[in-house]
Every structure is written in structure tokens, then in C-alpha cells.
Length: 168
Image: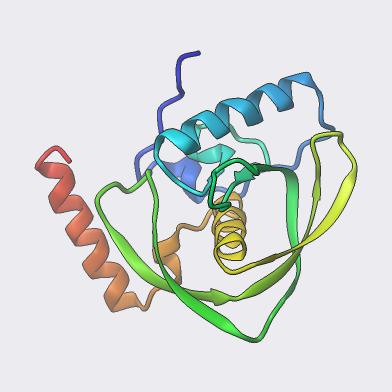
């Protein structure tokens, strides 16, 4: 199966809120499989559909040590976030070559449609939680650098544009 191409920042689709899906069907399941293939090839621990140009509220995450426990999510919504936070380096294939430390809640409770189309609630912690939050941000039209201070964001984007001009 040919992989879809990752959109490159500043593509407008990356800053648009993605509409919800109506239901989970064979087409959605196939798209989740395609997204997992792209995510594992990056390699990454999560992917939102709009990162590959699909404007549907879908995400996949797999932060398991063996990269063998993927979670497929339709219409994910963060219901609760812990007050305790963690900082991690985050990056995106939509802005290759740069990363930044982002602080996020350590634990989140998320509601989403699972592979069978049933509404599910699940608590995610640590890297799982960071990845889910990162994907929900994408679906809301935000990238990781939107969580940085204005000065750090400006420096990161300048570095990314410089790398882009060099063909990275």
C-alpha cells in the first residue's frame, strides 16, 4: 500500500479543526491501518489523520515498549487532565528536523470511538498521555510549537524554515 505524504507546515489543513466522523466503518478501519503503517515508519508514537491530509477526526497511538498495542480513536475528547505535569521532547513529521520540550498533564481521561464504533473511556499516563494530547491538539488545528512561549516558537520556526531551505 502506498503511503500518504505528510503535509508540510504551514499547510492550512494543519491549522484547521477537523470535523467528527459519523460512525466507524470499513473505510475508517482501513484508514486507521494506513495511519499505523505511517506512524510506525516515522517512527513515532502517534498520528492524527489531518497530518496526512485526511480531514477526519481520527488518531492512532502506540507508546508500548514492543510497539504492538495500538489504540485507534475516532472523535477523541479529553475529559479530564491531571494537575501533575511532565515535560517531554515533542516533534512532528509536518515540521521535520525540529523538536521542543513541551509540558503537558501526566494523566488524561479520554473518550473516543473504538474500532468497533463503541464509545470508550480510557485513562492514559506518561508517554501515552502526551501522545494522545499531541494528537488531539493536531485535530484541533494546533501543533506542538503552539504550546511554546512566543519567543521559543519564533526561534523554532526560524530554525525549521532554515532547514527547509537546505532541503531537510
